[in-house]
Length: 627
Image (tube, rainbow, N blue to C red; front, side):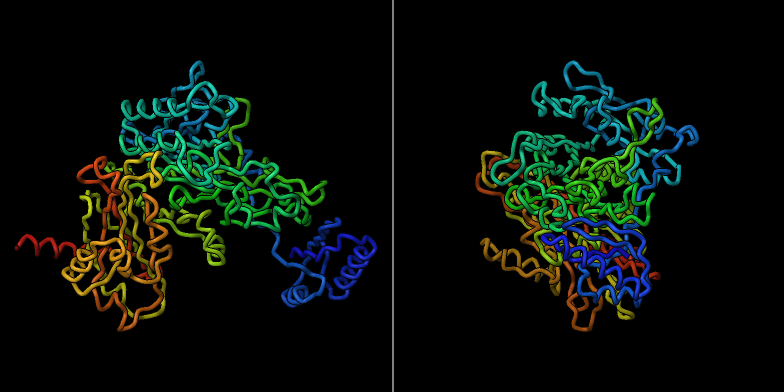
């Protein structure tokens, strides 16, 4: 166990007496002291004890906290492997979907990337397509393989996507030769025209432009406009906190975590606030540094975040008009600090807490590198988005966004923060994508999709088939209904409300379709519509989710009784469009949207939801045919 004592900072003599008394107590209680780290503001002991002794430690007057030592680490042996011993990587095929990395270029000859590379171009005047900084190559490995660490541990790399690279950053990971908006637009139009690419990763942000409210900047507007015009999906990193005068000092990195993630200094940066893109924040995966692994009895290197908590550098939302941003999270790394160094030195790089991927200097014997940042989180989501196109090649960018967010789960370690303070939704969004049923339905996890278009001031009504098995009795178990909706509206930076149209959804119960249509068609005024009650216990809530152009919510159930609404009524999703007055002449007569509804009964090993839902839908089709 790691034991921290209450600090006695002002009196060296009393502090020494505290240490001596505590160590005497440890000896008397038979608790084995393995190591310690001592300074004026911090006293740590690493001890070995049994359960009874652990309870005694918790009750000790001088003990501030007791915790397990860090245990999740990225071993050096995983990172420093001989790539010559890896199997040859085969090309994914010309029909494989593409994922485009807009970054600092690409080392196209890397043994794990080369076979999958479709094209690499530079859109930076006077620069080649090669990667001089390594950032683009690191991002590319994650965009191509997703969870690169798992592939590295299994030594199995099978690319299922084609990889494209558009260089827009120089060797310093900057763009100072012109307007980055022009370079990105040129790159996007090129890859759409030449290769029909539809998923673009942009792990780039301007730290000088945090979003503190008001109008969105030029790059956000560019991405939103291109998303709508070209039907492409941009996956964008939320940005990293830049260590400086607004950062915590020493122990405050740990003691004030995670509260500083809500400070202005941690607000996401341009172009993360763009509404028609997916913005990705970072989760910690590891909490054990290389030194902690090598010296297991030394408690001096302390991680700031625990696995599946937000990374200490990840930036927060919301976006314009309070829209939830970032929408998704993925593993991007962690930071720690060393209590033996002066000032509790921050360990933010090269300590084994980051994300491993491909290195641009592979020819010099360094095929892999480890780095931390939301730049590493975004391409893992881009990988998932492009992978959906393998199963659904005609899926729109709207459907990709709706599917990814509807299949998000909030890690329990992050959910605990939201339970304490709902404000942490600004950091965590909808959670991390669970890909177990992302690409196709399972018997216990069914996904229903609709890609449609709707006129202004109209409602679309979808009745959701709920099999009796879903609400059946038996043992208490977790069941879930998830709904995701996405659209890409016209935007104007000169308008406070920014988006020209609003489309949102409600999940409601009613005896039949006639009742629900009457209820919504009567709601001609805004207040009437807002007063329509939704199925209770939504995780996010209609007011919060509807502010974005990709919306998701989740309803969880443990038990149904005979009075439950889902047993006595029918379930409907109602999609509503309502343009802002200034937007009415700009919007299309029919605006496109994608809707996703998921039914999940994962704890029921005998569930046959897919079979039963399909049977109900087929029965409806036969009924319409007879009419």
